[in-house]
Length: 269
Image (cartoon, rainbow, N blue to C red; front, side, top):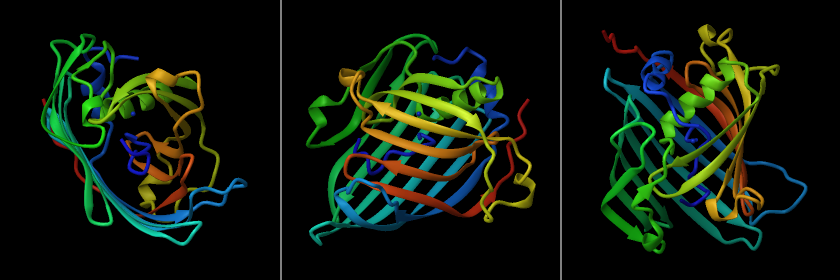
């Protein structure tokens, strides 16, 4: 997946058979809006200007977890070239972590450059998985994996397990993840949240436990190299991500939380 559309919450250690359903109960369905801006860095990046918006939604039923986002970015290179990037992503995961449906579409200046849709299934949470594509278009379609190693987490399962680690007092979390496009190794450093919180947060969330998470994504074939994507965020115990950064070799941006709507959880037996 292009680093322009990878998210911190998916921003993405195998779950036990009961971990996903139990911990997901603490996650709150919500809709969040983030405004995008360039982030100052000592080293110049490809893009000197960044602006745009991302709309993120998380919902759940008693059997499944749903995540989707749409992100529009207007980019200007150091040479003055303008690029409009759009990413539309959705994941529907079973709460037991055994299967997932995904859709990942990316376009530049109105031209679709990558579009993948499919399903992932496995017999048990700790078993290898099979990936089946109903759509696989783009320059890197031949590299799309058709199977996943044991213990690979889906995006929401990864977020849930990061929060589990934070609640348990752990300061480091690592995992192998699949986001519908790539398999990545993900290292996360977890620290206590000591900073001022976003004014856009509802009052009820001002006292919600939260942690600062620094997340680094590595390609499996280059695990000893520098990460190809990094993000830092404030992660709340209810699954909400506050403002976060996005850093690659050619992009350095910040996404500021500007709107947040909390929704009701389903009542499940």
